[in-house]
Image (tube, rainbow, N blue to C red; front, side):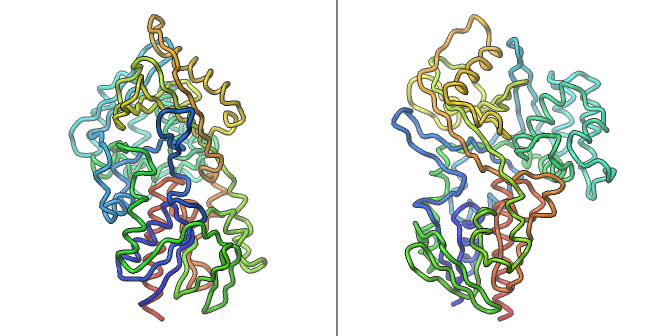
Length: 443
């Protein structure tokens, strides 16, 4: 039986390892920490009465590779789906806007929703629909000189309300980069998948339990049932490779080798471990940079929000997640998690400053007569949540293959054509697994 080593237990490594195991290949998955999930996990804190996700993660119906993984692990029932797509926003002063798509085939479900919404003036509805149609078919017919989302918004005449409610918050949430930097063609790939596949592709999907309870506990059992294993606390210390062989040596002193190797680790970690002066492209990976995601978690004394999630227009925080609605939080009060993507400036503020900022921004968007107080508060920061995807960064994203035929790469930062999302990670892991299978057939 062929043997493959997978280094890294995030979504990319898990997708690769389980896809290989499913095909009867012996897999050993090495994880440096004592749990799986990479940058997707939950924690417990004695000062907060509920689990804390390191960032509220929103799945979508178009996450086909992700659902393939969850189905493999038999945990695809741990989610709540909003289909057809429904969104609402709170505006300063207490006004509320909403978008309700129709139970029609795509893209008519969205067109109906945009025509009937109170979120945009009529003229902006037309310009928004026209702009979205650029991404209905491939290749996207966008002029080469238009590189960023900001340039595209200007070119298509997007109005202030559509920028505030649609383009900017969606870019921040999906790309984790500002509209002034994010590449329009990469963002266009997301829009194409979300709005121009099936209606279900644009549905919002929320977990009904904390992130650490979604799939990760099933992975060791799955691999064991398929003659594989997970090795926790096995961070790699050194890596040796030649044309036909490789050795991965961990901090515990163990040496792992096999027929093929998949690296599914952050780019800076790969740069540090790869043999010096061996592959120049590896040395440029730190230039991808790091973009943070910040979350403020509150238990408030009264129910402020009834929807599963609500956008905050003009706020530092794009979305508020209502944990009571999809987690069935049983404690006192309402559990809210507010998320700020591309939050480099916010990430340097203290917890007290951030909690005060959140309270003020919520109060600005809720009726003045509605009094409430914060019972508990906690901030989580994922400082290296994603790389910084710009047009220049595309040149730095590496393919699955390496100069060594038995060594492959996976990770949301690799050249998937998608932003650094869970779907991008799963796509990269499944691609790496398929490359390994093809390689094993040749040897």
